[in-house]
Amino acid sequence: MRLNLPSSPRAILMAIGLTGLIALLWPLWAVQMAISRLRTARHTSTPVDIPRVDIADTDLQTVMRHRTPVIISGLTASLDLDLLPDLDGLHRLADDGLEPFRVKTHRDHSPYFLYRGDYGAELDHTSEMELDEFVRFMFDAEQAPGTCTYRLFSVADLGGRVGGIVDEISDRLAERTDATPDRQASGLWIGSRGVVTPLHHDAWTGLLFQFHGAKRIRMFSPGDRANLYFSSPRQPNAVWSRLPGRSSDTDLDQFPRFAHATPYEGQLGAGEVLFIPPYWSHEIEALEANISMPFRFTTSVREYLDPGFLMPAMEIFDSKFVQPRTTQR
Image 1 (cartoon, helix red, strand yellow):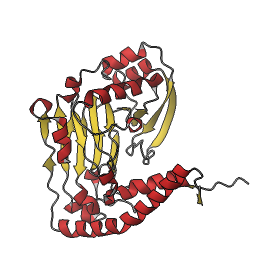
Image 2 (spheres, one colour):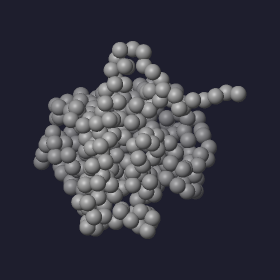
Image 3 (cartoon, helix red, strand yellow):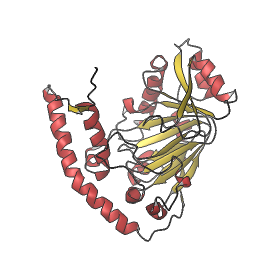
Image 4 (cartoon, one colour):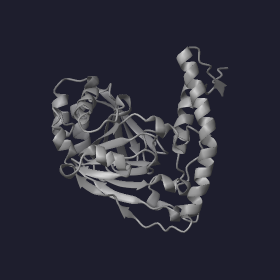
């Protein structure tokens, strides 16, 4: 490994700030892990239903202030988007003659997890498709037995139209919360049945908009972090949890502390929104071919001081200042 030394004043300040933050968080993280183990040592794994609310009976700012997961109904409809990215909306986008894109299909003997790589899933084949063809492939045709497909469209994809949808949601939400959207961290996810995002946690507050299909949700509070077998933050590019992709398949003889973790469970249906507080571990499985959008907000200063930010801080430092050395012979 080699260190990429920053040259601009801004990059130098960022490197110094991240280094100091990491140095501060390491002992706090170790203490938090120890306390978490002690506090949950006698807990049993009894599932808790994720609360459900109707946006007509509350407001988004109140939901987000409580910092516990909630499934919200009525929010998407109340935003009155010009282009709702459901099946009809995607077909409308396809009429604009957008450029084709690459689609990867994987063998589903293990879960597929785009954000951290393929999570052990084996690539079956890659195709070039236009949007209308892709929508028909995902929702009208039968997936080949033993395969799964999952595509993340960033804000720049589909001729920038994904970014337009994100911006419209940002404008509509500005009247409902004072949190600042993180445009680049949002996107549009389309996946087939059985695709799993394995257990991980983020430092960012998020809303998961479900536009089509249903997903199974499993979440764990930050207080359970020591029972979830996250890799050491010294391995910033490693998968954070060493549990199976579907944590319900966990062998308790191999991971005994998981028996003390309390899962929060629910099902997210079309038109609903999941509020994901920072540092809440979450695992999501598609129950059918679906369309969703992870919409994220920027991290506040106080959230940077949570020991849970140690892993993202290590990851940012690694990606910006530490690069693997490749030697060509």
